[in-house]
Amino acid sequence: MFGAKAEIAAREKGLDFELVMVPFEMKTLYEPKHPEVLRINPKRQVPVLIEGDLELFDSTQIFEYLESLKPEPALWPADLKGRARARLLEHKSDEVYFPHVVRLMSDPRAPGAHDATARFYDEMEHTLDGREWLAGTYSYADIAFYMAQLFGDRMGTPMTDAHPRLQAWRDRMGARPPVRRVAGAMGLYLLSIGRKLPPFLAGISA
Image 1: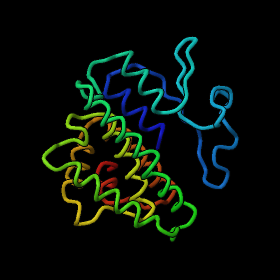
Image 2: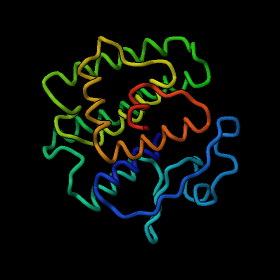
Image 3: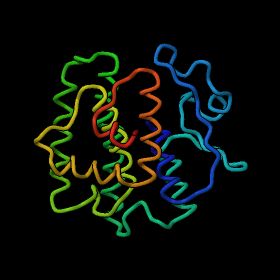
């Protein structure tokens, strides 16, 4: 999920890069680790970014570098408070919403996880009142939550009829070529190993 966030951002900005995928298997997680991942990230996780003598890890840190490297098209709002709100939304996707999804990966009936994700959907539904994107303009906050909710849906906590704005937002996200390319490739991989896809992901993975 976190690698996909960084990849979508790089593609939105039209950057040239070499993508190296690290094999993943739930039973063994990232073993054997890619040697560059091990060397660069003490957490032993993707994504990592290498550009010359610069080596970064963590999807948000990588994104901040990409934003500075190529400011246009901007993926943070232009105004100070808008950027702060967008950064907070991105952080909440990773650190408030997604931990409940992680719990569902190991226990589909994890106490409180379904209720917590539903409350987060309610909050994002309210956030979208009168706006097209989470932070007003399209931003990294949208990318982060799109990837997080993709996994949430797969883990059995989908949006419901109580979230029409959020579902329309997700459709707009899936129509963006970089999102469609990255999420669609993920969907095709999941299909290749016999996993079922949420309808919205199946629609962009065809």
